[in-house]
Amino acid sequence: MNKHFLGDTAVLLGRSLRHIARSPDTIITTVVTPIAMLLLFVYVLGGAIQTGTGSYVNYLLPGILIITIASGISYTAYRLFQDLQGGIFERFQSMPIARPSVLWAHVLTSLVANLISLVVVLLVALVMGFRSGAGVVDWLAVAGILVLFTLALTWLAVIPGLTARSVDGASAFAYPLIFLPFISSAFVPTDSMPGPVRAFAENQPVTSIVNTLRALFTEQPVGAGIGTALAWCVGLLIVASVFAGIAYRRRFN
Image (cartoon, rainbow, N blue to C red):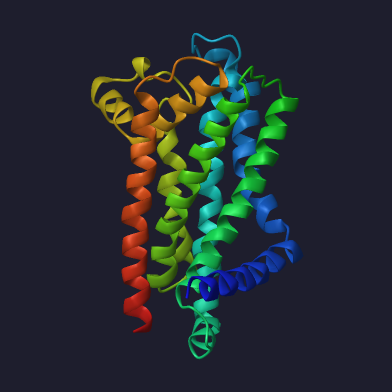
């Protein structure tokens, strides 16, 4: 059964990746917003923002990477909704394939597409002056956190992709996720925020994830922050995947 599932998932993943290869504008559109924010905040607003660090692009990049992921997963919900409307899922249901492989193909496609987007944004940041003395282990930790966060948000995107009644409804859920980093330590230190806003910012998932990524990039001690960041990522991943599975079974059982 596992072998059957893996083979079916690989075939369906190849199908989805071919669609992306034929339409690279999807990835281009995904990276436009975070790159535009990177340029705006570094070159227009960066001089007026006090972060206590030498380079604002170094401070800003972790938050921009989170926004890149949030922008990218909206396309997961969109592609899933389009397949549902096109009858592809019903066609697959009538074939002797492992049912979970259909969802996993979409999830893995999202992971690949988002990783490409993250690399593009990172390259732009390097051109803008981003530098990191992080070692191999630190970079692997950064990659691991970004992969976990991408998987968590992707499974979250599966839910509206399966339950939305329109294309706009399927992709609109990502908008709050894109703006969540603005109420965090992604752009400015939380110390500068009013009391209630600061309390929210310091206790929401983006702040712990951004702070951990920033510490890894700058070779600073991550402390207990990395445990909090991983707990948010893993917890969201488990909850989102469970509810996505329930939505899938209700739709096709």
